[in-house]
Length: 193
Image (cartoon, rainbow, N blue to C red):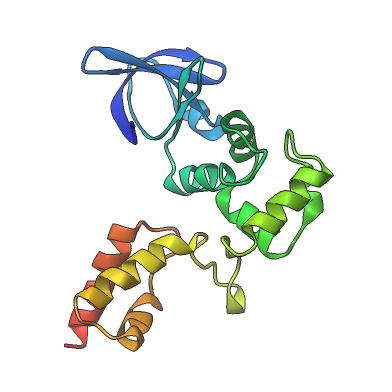
């Protein structure tokens, strides 16, 4: 399975591009925000979701990790396919989507392409425990819990206590990767050592 590609944009389409990676051209469907930034003969890199069907293998790419994580999360909802998830992430940011789910805003979701009332209700039901919106005091928290959870497990394996880890995460910026969060926390933890 392909998870990441980096190369040079050779051709552009309305919904994607062909990316030359060491002489091999990959057709990648991209979200609208990513598509707007692409130009021919420039370097580009994408987080890739590989969708394998009986009649095709399609690559879906996003330049932004939060958008990619939202795309993959949407695929866990029954009835949402890759093309539908791509249409959704093209119209709403990961942070706005997280807030809509956290606040159970069905109207926000029904404004998205391909999302009717029943689909919106299903998305809210299936994702309410997987998505977090704004935290106390309006500070934007990490949208998807997995990065924080994975970083916590890694730091606990290194011998840090849950209290130490929680204190280190307090100043962490929003929307960072697991690796970045671990590095940030280790710097914070070493200050107090």
